[in-house]
Image 1: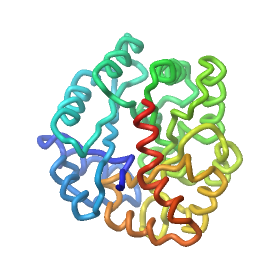
Image 2: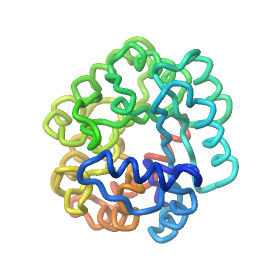
Image 3: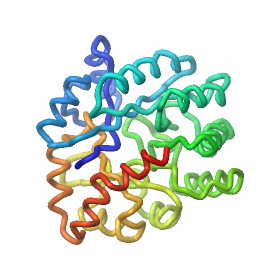
Length: 278
């Protein structure tokens, strides 16, 4: 079993335009599929990936209904796809919206501090993350540099402060936050200082410099992060369509320095446990 915990898709009618706009707005970014549901399903088949978690991003206030109707349709139609929900920090009635997601079977939400130009420790995000902790929803956030932005809205130091503050407020001790991109793209020293060993998950999307993805971490550094954070809190993830799922899975499986059991944890067991607890 292989679960890709970080993928994106766009509705058919806007996929081409959206992909084109994102590629043009970023630096050093490649695209490997058309960004549609069908393209993801074909990629998964080629890559021998059994399930993909789709992470929608609300880039402005008022997209909640549109984004989550589409996500709900995915969850009801495709057994090998699981879409999280999307919410914007400026949305009204945050608690009610998150409760709606929980009541409709969503396992978690995706937030992207850069696209909302809101720091992860902003009171609005603290409110969202605190409510998710209370409801048992997983929170996946972009972390570190984004190639389309100059400001880093989720640096490791702020990420750790949020973890500690939410745990203090809620007394929720199970790890429920996922910091993408090995804890923070282009922030490996800060990740080691503030996040490794803490009460969170880290996904490995955009982590292998040798694959040409937007990152600067070597295979040896990835293995070191896994060792220091604990293989039981690492999630296999690709960020498809921005990385090739097949190349990513094969590269991860070939890594030296990890046991077969550690690879099984990262490829599926950790994701299964996290999704089961949500």
